[in-house]
Length: 194
Image 1 (cartoon, rainbow, N blue to C red):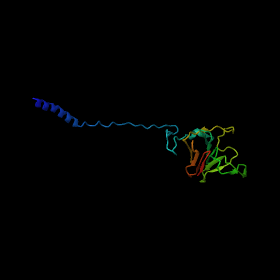
Image 2: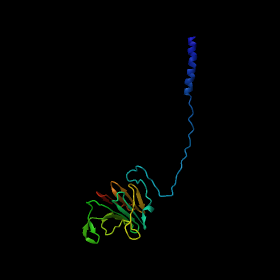
Image 3: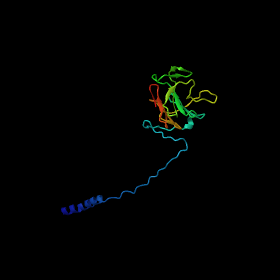
Image 4: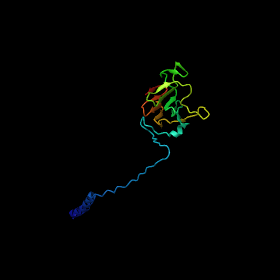
């Protein structure tokens, strides 16, 4: 009788084992809906950590415009820069490094002085340091007084025509003519004129 019970007890185990081997069909794939959102305001590609050289955000030029030109300052206020559309040039004022080359003085070209500006044009010439008597890259109000420029956040890019500029905490101000490949990067300790 014992053998008979063992054999009968084995049948449910065999059925259980066979049931475990039967494949259950996988659920049908579920469609995933996606949507594209289009903004009508200035484009923005802000991300928390953009690779070096890639802007975190594209600045809206209209926010930096003053009488047809585009001005900005660095968050530290060390750098004051402008894209001057009438002159087809871009440049900055700031604390240049002590090893920056001396240039002919503004109003006294026979005297060599420390530069107070750096810029690049649209003429396929490399960027250069120079001296100006009046601020060239500050915005002016309608009354002719120097106005306050909007801050360009670190890592953001401002592009107007062929010119693109950025500010970085470690490397300072960078402006390039994307058509000619000429430009500059300046900080208070180093510079690169291209």
